[in-house]
Amino acid sequence: MTTMLKKKDWSTLTRRALTATEIVANLAKLEGWSLSGDGANVAIEKTYHFANYYETISFVNALAFIANAQDHHPDLSVHYNRCVVRLNTHDVHGISSTDFECATRFDALVAL
Image (cartoon, rainbow, N blue to C red):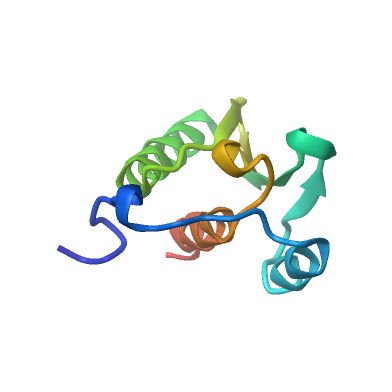
């Protein structure tokens, strides 16, 4: 099984909230992602645009498959021709490297 689809086991891994400097550096590596919210509600967010509802839902289904394998589930706002994806790590009360790892994987879905 590819590492993209292999289920993460968080019991063997530790996560921490990234510093502001680390967040800015990681955001610079991603296209279209921005910082949203503040405090414990801070997240990274991106809106993906599609031609129609079918393409939007296809993206959401593929994203859900990856999110489940990563055991890291984003907040989604699904509309006819777009999906807003919002990532943060609840157990660290902020943004972790896991959020950026998932963002990269989600971006790969639309790069195909």
